[in-house]
Length: 453
Image (cartoon, rainbow, N blue to C red; front, side, top):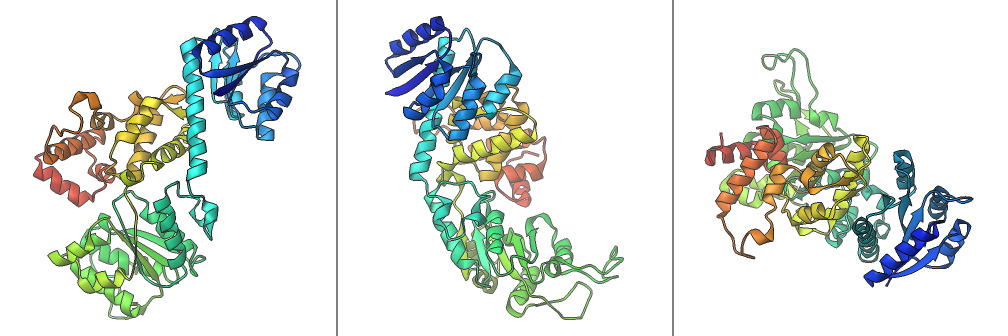
């Protein structure tokens, strides 16, 4: 049974809360009116919840919160006060209080706060007990930017640790928004080139002619507008690592030149006949099935086999659902701080919606959803109604249709979802493509296919 310590110097309040909490049949309640005994009692006994009055003589509620924080006492605190003091509430939250309620406390509100605190304690304990820890890795610090508790991801991390010290080319594949560049940066960080440049290039954002110029560089006068010599991405990454994202978008003539770089370490600037040498490790990434692309003639087999000597697959977010709460709370903290807001938690309805969604844009889309919600939200809790409209329309309540019975064709669902995302981005195809987890070229093709222009 949940153990609750109620601390208040007002006997009437203690008696009222005692009767109310005991009547629920859910709690083992201990009452305390002497705040000078609180820290000792919390240290000697185990409590799940502390209902803490802030305005007490001798030892105040803030004093007790500080002691709990300093001593690492494992208890979830819900602050009670007779004065609506925003500054006091902020101070309490910074010291680790779970919630802040003003007297007279609405009983339903209090029960919701208690259950919310218990649910959070439970999820954190499960994560601590079940999740693999970074310290199980040989180089845990290299992975600290990646938020996960998924065992599949930790197996990938262990593979990364083995591949990183080699000089081999690595192919990272998986859907857009799964964190391929983060993994590439970890590989660079753990390689012998870690003190050299890391250059990231997205092949999907350049036209073919522009990519060749940007990638290989050009000589003065090579084409109209080439007023000076220019070093390309290859030379910028010399001695270091070049991360080439969306490699499946490269035109065949560029693929031939890239293969020469991989095999010989040689290239030519545009407009030059001078052979240049470069020492660079290439990490490529793709959201396409390159094997299928070779069958279609869109990707060279010799380049594919060269790139695929060592490969890493990153699973989509829908295959690591347990990471959604971790990532959502991580993004909430980050964006709340950036926006100067004090949004402390995600409401239960909002979290349920986040867990139901399929995330075609993966982690990047979840990040955008939380960021959008933080901008809209005006309370201390990120509520479902603050999340993007396209997202809310895509999360269909189970009661609206027969369980497990599809109501629309895949084509209809895809068309509607693309239309919602385009509406959300105001027609910005680059932004929409990122959310949908496809290239801008692919989005334009689908827009034409579905008549969404």
